Length: 446
Image (cartoon, rainbow, N blue to C red; front, side, top):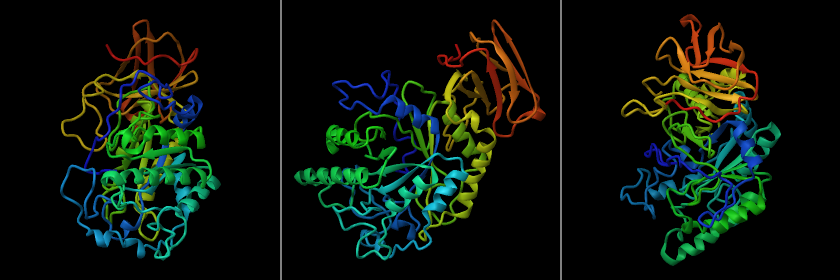
């Protein structure tokens, strides 16, 4: 991940489903049932971790030395000879993968994606293709972290996912003229290792830093991956659309024609940073809810300490999110965004950072499941939320977050109001039960 790029990967307004195969897109994509299952999960844990946690700087980006394939000339503030030898001191004796998995469960997360190799080239798994790895004879730890964590996920009922960076600033062949052809085979070999030696992998997060498909021989690579793990969900960072889009450190707009997933940090840095500043709980929950109403997933990152523990403050923040989901998760999990799309969705504050809410008449949005629509009212531009007309009749309504609502339906639309005393400080959730399925096309304001 590139912390300095806030919106590095835009959402594509693709008309075709991700699994459609064309001459321009030779990848057939994951089966639709696998994509729908992934969307049901909605919330996952991202973990960036490695030897760099010893010095508390950003993973890969703080490494000195050249970054072949990058336009910038500046490099990181940790000398390359120091950075590349941190693994000889990396001994996370307090790492307990079951504790990480339990934290994910406590947070209401349904899957976990781990950085098996970042741009710095260090492998957290026992690759047979390199000695620059956690199981090296020069490593004091010498245990296969990917093995330990993937097994813990399966024990704990959390679905296992892999992050793998194609760029590798440590490998001598990477983007080094004709030698790059050898690097491509190295990359393909490691992907095969991760998909054959560690059981079922549910999702795969490439991070190609804008590289093209030819840079990785992506059509052949993805074909191999599909053959090894047919239900694998692969993101769009290998030069091909694959299965899902990946907005970074921002919330995507409403998009229900192609899956997407926001990845973001709970603090200001992807990897461990001492005394990091955390996002407030309101911002964390707004990020999660805004993904759901936009029909996207939320992959939320923590960076463990060098000893293997996750900072107590970070863990506490995630558990706060879990407390919210324990009460109101029915309006998030296994839902789809819509049908109501609030007006002024793109009216974000100028120079807004974080997950700043839209302004104007934007009030939030909705999720739907079965015959129910959940209104997530994140702000009140007026005392009454005016919704467009729908073909179904509202037969019952309630306020999940407490109190009561006034819901008036007419041929012209639906008017919803909640007394100020009954509005939730973060998300007022009004449940509308219909006389038929809520599965209807998105309704955008005129």
